[in-house]
Length: 286
View 1 (tube, helix red, strand yellow):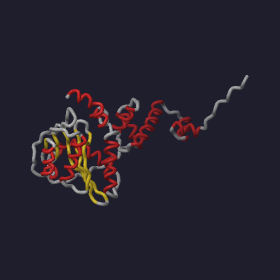
View 2 (cartoon, one colour):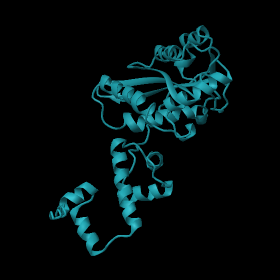
View 3 (cartoon, rainbow, N blue to C red):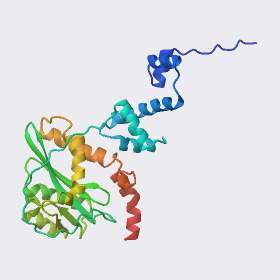
């Protein structure tokens, strides 16, 4: 009769490495075993650290969404507690406020803070943000579709002129197959009151809308996007050149914001996923 194979002994250091904890933690557990709840917490913290390393800007709410999407039955409060315990925090910086001059409106306020839409290309929001580099300022004008929160058009340049806003609008019109009748809401900045921008609205049969002076909430939905951009890109480092910053902005918008950042208002879908899931039903209802 053949002798039975002797059991394979795995060195403790190897087992700890595979299981994702230190040798010291193992010996501490041998002396004082942890409860199942504590062990589960440590496992969840390991997953949270990995997710946070991949997307350092994620706070506990977005991390909760990611964990639930992976199949973990966790609540926001538990993830918040574990993040506090492990020192996992989103990269958060305070946005520098822009001090732009405003003038008389050249159009009515067609939105009145109702930042909702029941289909694509019903309501677009547009605004401009700025950021310093070692070469000087860089400006971005973006156009967002309220329905899916997708940035449907944008332009980036070193001068804040009317052409910056016109180029972003033209880009949005091209990307969305020249919709007609879309409401385009902005603040009263000179770029949006310019003859060139107003002419572009008429040329493409779009409806211009402008918020009120001194009403910060009038374009809050657009400001929320720029706040994310500020936290996740603009304030993450000191930018040496405009081109370096421009590439970082494009990479974040197209790679992360559109395709990786789930949004609760969209049913925990990304803007791209939301449009793919809903465009069929919208087309049928049209």
